[in-house]
Length: 227
Image 1: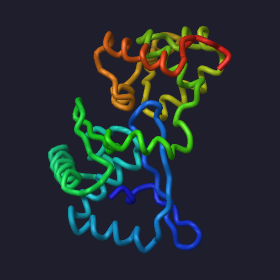
Image 2: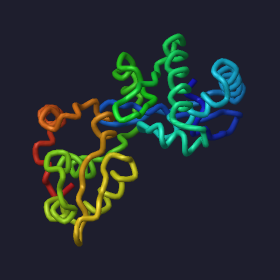
Image 3: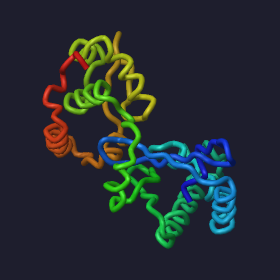
Image 4: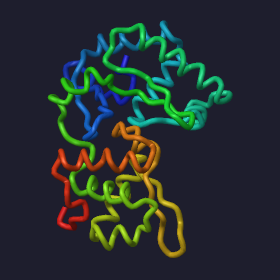
């Protein structure tokens, strides 16, 4: 059921698909299916849950991050958030009944995400082709998580000139937000950041969890400007 989004037709009538991993480090895996199998999957899903629900699934998958009900309503031109919520509930039930490695999960602040089930994260990681975040942006993100809310200028002073490109990348991924603050901007992580990495939304608990992750990945010097 996860073949609905980001499809690309390849040679020999194949479709390329991508599965986003929601565990740290954020990564993805890719593969191929035949065009015939793809069409069968899409048609079966549309018959099973209806076209609108299938569109919601495609939107969640294409986003690769949690989406709010407001975003879903806007993108799919639904009547209201109640309709979006009902479609998500339908998808959740379908995923529970189907033998699939994916699941749709409701999150705080009226959001939902399509992600890999925890039981499949470890085996899927063996086929990970590349991390979504390289070490440099990851260090910058770590600095923000520790010191937030933090001024953009302070981040650049600590992390170096590359921090500005890191901030742009992190913002595009929906992991941070930047708000105008005098002549600079105030930066903080978004709820998506905690959800992506499976962290607590409590700042104190998040810091403790991050310290454990840093020790595991040997990221002790998160302020190192050389990365």
